[in-house]
Image (cartoon, rainbow, N blue to C red; front, side, top):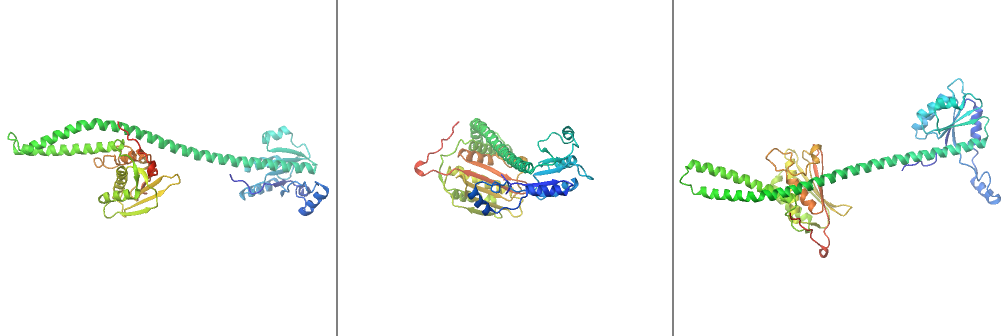
Amino acid sequence: MSTPASPNRRILVVDDNRTIHQDFRKILCPPTANDSLDAMEADLFGQTEASARLPGFEVDSAYQGEEALLLSRNAREQGRPYAVAFVDIRMPPGIDGVETTSRLWKDDPDIQVVICSAYADYSWEEMMQRLGLSQRLLILRKPFDGIEVRQLAYALTEKWELLHRSQLRMEDLARAVDERTRQLAAAHAQITQHQRLKALGRLSGALAHEINNPLSFILANLGYLRSALEGSPPHLGPAEVQELREVCAESTEGAERIRRIIQNIKLFSRLDDAPPTRVDVHEVLEQALGEARNELGPNVQVVREFQAIPRVHASETGLQQVFFGLLANAAQALKESPQPRVRISTYLQEDGRVAVEVQDNGKGIAAEHVNRIFEPFFTTKRMGSSSGLGLSVCYGIVSGLGGDITVDSAPGQGATFRVLLPQAPAPEHLTPLPVRIP
């Protein structure tokens, strides 16, 4: 919390009588004491008036209400507002003390005001009607005693300090609440997405299991039909045989594509994960880069920023699939980039997890798509060019390893995929994670 370097002892005296200003200065700004002499006096004679002196005040003078308003505005603009204003009730020919107080509060709601009056110009009820009931207002009758002025000045500046610190504290608390609310909202969105994808994973795994069995029969029957057509059946003409062969080939290709989709679904639902071991991330990255070379093409610049990191607890095959999927996704995003580049970086986070980032300078992802990018079958590519399972598979594998995967992207700003993985325990303490079987 930000607090003033020193207490605010600034006082504004508003009175058309110059003698009054001299009186206030004598009371609130006594001559500077000699600290060493005061200390000696206190040792010899005990506590004295000098050694018990209240703090000094900084006093400014205004001789009309309009001048007081100007000084108050300037003080606030300079970041040194007045804590207390002693305001005379009658200041001809200008505005009176009640009007001056009202305008002061419009500019500075925190200033404490003491109205000084020798005459009953206004009753208390009339003042309340014009100014409202306020804890910022006191009345001091003239002629006043010096100790009354000093006590009021000290008490009201202390009150201003306490209120000011309370306001700063409330502002800090409000900022902390806003930040915590933002963090909780982000965490809630992440948890909601994780739960939704987990449910989709279970559903996808069940569907894959149900589809796989009849698909096996279809592929087997297509294989049998293809073999029968190789012998040119006598009851069919050459044109009919050729047409059936083409239909059989197209059907086989479609069925094989369905089988590949099912394999990806199984990966997404974590049905086929191998038991985790101690894996060197950099070795797996190099293997994935080798496999993705054709996907990336010769024009894509690959930048490696590898830091020394420990081994991770993961399935080498699954992790290679993750990195290949992210590189293949980057390759798709870079097709229209004039200077395509992929940056791969590794580092160790403060929480002990190993981070792997795959960043491209491609077209980026629209804001409405970022939260759905890991959903199965969701794709922004044209119909038929993608199954929409590549990133879902990456998410499923990483989640199954106890890690996390996120993306930061904006249109025209490229995308950064961040994979966070747990460190591998020492070899003697390595316990493979259980594989979930439906």
